[in-house]
Image 1 (cartoon, rainbow over the protein chains, first blue to last red):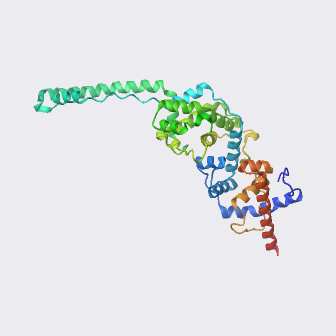
Image 2: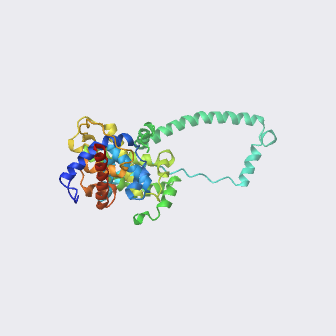
Image 3: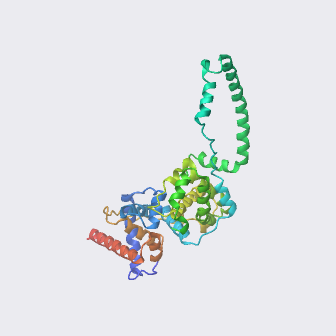
Length: 181
Length: 184
């Protein structure tokens, strides 16, 4: 043990302490096992000192048994204690571009317009006869084929506009969400 | 919590509803926290070129699957800056694991990867379950295996140095008594 600030536990006591711990450690670790890493919120709560005693003990078991546990805690504490670093503007802009504005929906049809449309498309008893319905079906078919082609071109255009963000999303999701905590 | 976090609950509520303006505000407000965590984790490994991509990964994670990760955040349990630092830190570690390369400067290798267990005691020692609490074992691990001083150990656990000294003393007293009884 480094002797700084250890009071009476100095010199030979420290060497004695190390010997005792190294004798006991394998047995303690075997009995305790390696616990799983806590989730991000539990770890953050531990770092903020807001965990209850039992949950804090679980985090400390992980720190004592998993080597990366202590490294993580030390690295995060060092980051939290350090002065903030401003992120470059282009980094902020790139992250903001991940989420797109949702398209604005058109206004709902009022009763007057709906009534007018329903009268037109009311089937054989309405204003349009069977021949018109056949024509309408053909038009729908034509519109579907054209729409598909137009849509494909449109998607390719959008993808090229936003290739960087699309690639980011593909990369993360392509890893099957393994990165998600 | 900073002054800008007064409306945090409202901001997060709008954000998970898909409000683009809220997302922009969230990113502008917290990019510095994410940037600091990623930068400090990657720089020692000489991975400065990856910093921007990893920051982007962090924000993609936050909004992926309909903001699933952000929805797990609970302001009653931890500060948002602490939570974001943890998320950014783990994303950077995942990145380093994927990019792991053979030749790394020795200074950049985490302590955990360098430490070597001393030769096993030829005599199999068995200590009773519960003789040491996890907290006491952690103190011994930090002081002896990691060779931290008391102040470092206390800072790592977020406790007073006197608490560490006390736990250290109690743990050694228990071990001494146990081994003494075994020898008798």
